[in-house]
Image (cartoon, rainbow, N blue to C red; front, side):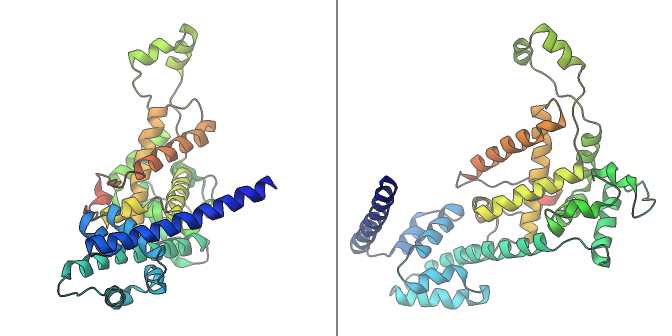
Length: 334
């Protein structure tokens, strides 16, 4: 009974707040002479702040046209803007900037939705060793990461040298499908120097410098053990697939909207997603060294702490995860 009453109260509050919000929008329209879309575009700077407000307004509208505008085909956006302005009785000759601003926002909103579809398609496609294209990508990954070391054979223990678990990498791509391979190859090709350095560090980790404040927290026995311990490395390729999973979940949850709406002036693309992966790999590597885990069994703890830090950063509407290395040269700040 208590559960039913709680649900009833929540439903009543929802409709009450929705009614109040509609009343407030009506009053604001009468006082300012502008609809909500106009107020957002004129009062909010370009980027995630504006686009996310526009998206919320369109999705929450009682108009079917506005509700469906966030899922139209990119080629239909211009016509959709015209229909919205006609519905809202806005003269495009008097308000030319509004159409331009709405178009930019819709391109980002629709583009993000399409990016999810593109990423999901890659994730669902399994690695096929009988597919020449898949095999070519895998061999290129080795070449980019180990340019001076020939791969002796397709099935080889050498794959462990770049962080795969066995002599045939195809089994490690099961969780993320081709998406994991696409991201790893992109990182290794577009930012070869950084990727090779991260790989080298993962195989031959260096202990970070410990501050005096940290030393004071250790007992003598703990300090002696810590001083003698070796830094813990990790499996580069496996961590890359794991970070692909992190990037994928950030995308699906909508957390990456802040980042993409701030860096992509129009529709975010697969390249933007892969650049974000490169940034996450780079940052996770630094974070791993900072955390200085006792053993590889702490990986999940470190990963979760890293995930929470990234999510916290993305809660800032002005945030853009703009990495400063080769793979990010195509990123554009708004």
